[in-house]
Length: 463
Ligand code: 4AD
Ligand code: MG
Image (cartoon, rainbow, N blue to C red; front, side, top):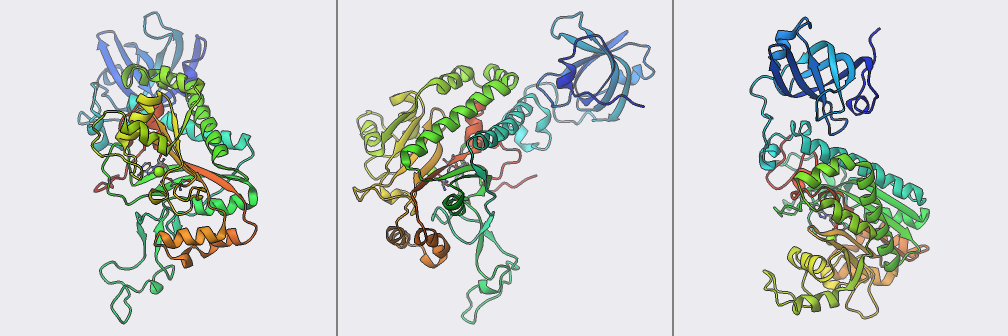
């Protein structure tokens, strides 16, 4: 019987000598001389590769010497203490099986490739150091998210991906239809007859699971969603994608203050998880992607996040003496340049900006007593800007009906949502954290396209 395969992450931790070890992976580099071939094999289970040493006694020694980068191999051998510098152990091969060759046109050769180039081969970039590290970190943080909420008694709710309503009221939705787009059913007047479509109404990909999440919070108290969300916004920036993953907790019996407190604990928990569980990958990012990364993350874990009202934030911006591209005044949307100035220069750490003017925020946010602001919060962090958007929700039926109308939305479409206020309404609050923005923050990667496996952006849906 064959010995089972050992993953390289485990092999590298074993105490040598160990005979009959079997590893499987992809060849990264190879050096040869007359009497020996060295190659590095990586299986993605950890950052490091395993050095394999081949002697001329191997039956296919010649062939091994001609192996090229990217080839898939299976190696059996003895794990020994490495006599050379650079690695603690190495594998003295007794058998090398060539499983899948990669010819010389393999695009990942042993040089640094630009992120832009690697985006064009997104199907191969998981085999690189950088993207292996990014996607291991992504996976571990997804698990840390579930652990955080699980420990606090939150229930994980799978909100629908296809919806009829527009949660944000911003009209940035992708249509979902089974119509032949060239020949949809039409009414006698010639308009598209959605009653004939699959759902007998217009349907979309969701922009947020929040409204459904609220219905569950008003029954299970503390819930969260974690799933893909879609925005048909035509923004080509390093911080926007059309399909992204969002974590949305929703808590009954909570106000805006409690909401910020949870968000702060959540972000700190995730940064700590990254520092502890992804130390090897983070250390790579710290050396090669973003020099002060680890220090910055450690600082954030121990710092108190600042809180400031939108009104005060605007005052800081007005007296900054900076000439921003977008002028700022009470009522203006904060742009990335403003957000970064506030969090990087004014406070030097993560900052909650709260109580925005009602005109620039969504209909579901709770009206403050001043009549002109809402109980909203955005968490701004250095280098990224907005990481989280959240609010206390409008729980008063009459006020919510009015704000839906004011936003130009059809209350009919929100009838079920209004029911939650009609029957046993209760104060509640929640937020949404953009998972890719968090990953940019944790890895130091500067483009959101490089922290999601296959990015979808305007004019790009490859792979
Ligand atoms: O601020 P947003 O639009 O808030 C909501 O969707 C609320 N319903 C959340 C809630 O209260 N439950 O989005 C939340 C976060 C942003 O702070 C940002 O991190 C991320 O989602 N985000 C995007 N990430 C990548 N690409 C985009 N196009 C994004 N739009 C928002
Ligand atoms: Mg927002």
